[in-house]
Image (cartoon, rainbow, N blue to C red; front, side):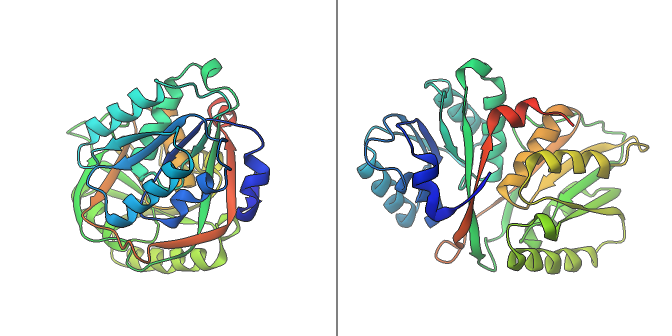
Amino acid sequence: MIIDTTEISASIWTKPMPLIARLSFEERSAVVSAAATPGMCRRGLLFVSEGRSDLAQHRVEEVTRRHPALAVVELRTGDPLSTAMSIHDALNSISLVDAIIDVTAFRREELLMLLQVLRGVDSSKRRNCRLVYVAAGKMADPLSGKVTQCRSVVGYAGEIWPRRPTTLVVLMGFEIPRARAIIEAYEPKYLVLGRGRKSESISDELSEKNDTFFKELASNYANIERTFEFSARNPLLVAEELRAAIPSNVKSNVVVAPLHTKLSTIGVGLFAQRNTDVQVCYAEVGAYNEETYSTVGTKTYILSLTELFSRRK
C-alpha cells in the first residue's frame, strides 16, 4: 500500500497502537511518530544509537516529549552481536499486536536483524503488525564516509566453504565506495550486479542516480557474471528476482550485499531466510553526511508483516 506522506495521520493513526521506530539524525526518522497525536503511542520502543550526534539527540527529545510512554533502547552500533541481542530482547518485551514498525531509519544491518527477530515471534503475538517506510525525496552525494569494516549480518551467516569460489551479488544503491569496499573485501570469482528497475523505483530522480552509479561501478570490473534489475519498493518481488538472478549451475559461496532502499533490503532478508546457505553482508561506515543526508519524500509505503512472511512465490 502506498499513501502520500501527508496522509500518515489519517491512514495509520486511527486508534492507539504500539510504535516501534528507529530515530536518527534524519528528519524522515521522526515523520511517522510526529503524525501521531499525543496519546496514540501508549507503548512501544524507540531504538537510538549510543553516542549519537546532537542532531539525533534533538530528534529523540522531540519524540519522547510528544510520546513519553515510549521506551528508549540504545544500540551499540559498532557491536553487531550486542545490537542483535538488544533488538531481540526489546521486541520480545512488548506486545506487537496491531503494532506500527517504522523501518525508515534502521540501518540495513539492523533492519535485517529486526526482520529475523520478527520471524521468530509467534504469529499470534504479531497479529496485524505493519511495516511503514517513508521514502526519501532527495539524497546527498556523498551519503557517508569511508567504510571501516565489511562483515556478515548476525543471523545471515550462510554456509561458506573455504574451497568454493564466491559469487557476490550487489544490489547497487547510491554509494559507489561502499560497493567497491565490499567487492574488494570478498574478492569474488563471480560478480552479479543489480540495478533498480525504473518502473519499480521510488522516484525517477533516484532511479536516474542509481543508473549512473551502476554504470560507473560496472565499468570497473571484468568478472561480472551477469546483471539484473530489481524492485526498489516491493520486497516480495525482490526475493523472487534474486532467486532468478543467482546462477544455480555453479557451486559457490553466495554473498548478497543490499545497498539500495530499505524496502529492497527487506526483500534480501526474505530471500536469505528462505535460502539459509546464502550470506548477507554489511559495510559499516565511519560517518554520515548528516546535514543533507536526505529529504522527506512524498510517498510512504505500508507493508503487512503477515503477508511478507506467509507469501511464497
